[in-house]
Image (cartoon, rainbow over all chains, first blue to last red; front, side):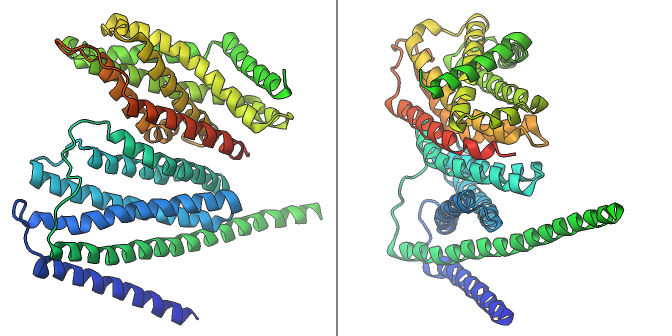
Length: 235
Length: 230
């Protein structure tokens, strides 16, 4: 059973890696170079799928947080944490690729354009989820506060999106006219990025689950260790 | 008067009586608010701070930091001598507890807003007379949303190691839509443009503030009970 699971995992990562390599080949060999921006435009094939997958990871955080508040089982908290780590990682990639694009298109690493600002605020929202956890000692309380924060943070996402639209100077393109080859490449890139997103969440969940089980067994052992001498004393 | 309203009035009265006797929170937050205005006034310089955008931003910074301190202090009072445990043993609905704590925080923040705004009018030449009604609407909606999130997470954070910094860390990212919408609307109202009349309240900004208040009032009221668990 364990061997089968290992083979499945290895197969999954092999497929993801192969798809990434195929995507890179498509970007450089199949897709034409954009006239105005040149080769830098190619970050777009990574930027958009990663941005969509960031949002999907945030949805997983929300679902897992609601799951914890409903069922109160530690597994939901582990899933929320794994998804949050993935969301922050993917959002960092969105910010980096957005900055590379901005430097090339507008001559500045950072412009307070509403969409870039939205990515930054989303990143901040979920980084805080990771930062507050170590400050709470009790595992149950940590999971509870994190679940409430995960729920509240997700409800904030549409409000952040709408509020940044009030900001002036939107120089971010609303849509980009793409050649048919460019569209095919962009659509193809959704596959490896989505597989990576799923793989990272699953891997993070498996690691966190093991950590939680070790912590729980340690907790039980320490309770057992302290209770034995007391029982002896009483005797 | 229904039992829930009677309980609500009793709880708000209790918080206000504690504040009137100890005078711990209001003095502290008002002085902090004034200090923030002075520091920003000195840092930005005489000319910059007199623009509508800079003075409204400075006022919001003072309201936000004063607000965080208010939430911390009002919840810290409940943790002293296990007062919260006693409160939880009373036959009072947890939703009423939340609404009472929210109202106490809002009343204290209203006093903070009055003091800080008056100081802003004096020190930063903030032209409140340009749109007083719009100012009151934005501040009221902004503070209701801010206090609804702040009251919820003050209950969550008050029992952790990093009480002070942690609450600001948790509240500020969530309240960013509120801050963006409020400051944009206030800048539209108060920024002085030569030859142009003052703008009206932006409809989309107002809609965001109302949506924020509605979403977080309901969500916080529903989940506050969970965070009060020991």
